[in-house]
Length: 585
Image: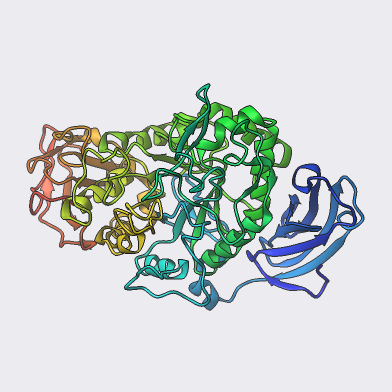
């Protein structure tokens, strides 16, 4: 346990380990452990989890320096779990240590105005993420030591991939904690019961007609046989968890946090939903799983998602997921140390889960073309919560759509143009909190010889290196970008290309007092454009931004708004995509 002389650093995970005296038929489902934790400015019941055998763990952290005390309890009462107590002292990090790893600054939360993200100490956090949905599996092996930045190959490790993305300015990776029914087991990757119930809708393993293997060194996330008649060896028993699988994931999450990366942990992919609801005690079974992963990862510096809701078919309705999620929150509270709740949606978390929901960080995603960036504007106008585009166009996109209708050669200039459209178009549409990138070969972690793109090759595509430039664009005036209000209709014309595309459109956001405007023109947008919403006689100085290099050009000559209150904008340097700022003088 801990003693009065135990010393830890603030915002550092501490495992309180307990050994149960008794035995349980199914410890995961039949027992509950907690500690009542008290510290400076903090008083909360923190729940633990069964970790296999007779071992139980409550993960805690100190949110402030000082003395912390705890007392344990359990249901049913167990002498090894209940009535234990301890204390520890939390100390602040040294300034040098904070510079080494920003995660030591605390949990990610919303800024005061609700539009952006920041660490607990107020340091800005502009989310730049990548989609490593299969990270828990053997496809991202964890090695000793730190990784290399390239070149990567078949022996690449999680450490190597982290090193590459850190060097490119990424600070977040998305992962799906469990894809319960997925295995290359000879059964089809898309599998339904005779009555139409979906057993799984998995990614196909290249070279086979079956599902992707998603096990790790600890096995698979849930135990077999399952409860689905006729599919007992395909769909597991969702009421019997395999802690060894999650122990492997623990080490990977620890590594990400130690490298300054914030994991965005999605608890389950939506294709497990129909069998989970139909053959298990819904909503109790799913609420239990939500609480289990909150207990397991709520003391990490992470974003937590109760469901990966990337598609509304092949699953249950979004409102049906709300029921167990809300039950878990009602029963156990929000994550105990302030982890934001979010989710990968289709088309947005606002549409899927409704206003005033459990969602703390909104997302759009999975509807990828530029007509869908508007969902971020809808979020902006509906609620004062931070928002990102969590799954836009994937670099090299091919497999989604078989092949994707707008497919262009991977790592080509058009491919990069598509990525930049999602990046800057989403930001100026209201996704002020950041952006999550994705690439073919990476999102599905392709390692098989038959893969169209091996994941280690996709990590070298240029589009990823350009993602970090959005920060230079956004922060030209520091954190003032959080004041921006999206309004693409200020630009005339702003939609000359087809809606199902990434070219020809323009975007705009402005400060409430109209003192400055931020714009982005997709490739092939008209060279002659005008700006509404400015006052006659006001003077602005234009400045262009190159999203390929992340560089601001020199300010241009001042331009004056005519009596019509419609300002003709200077032509951009060429027909490619460009950003622009107008600053009132």
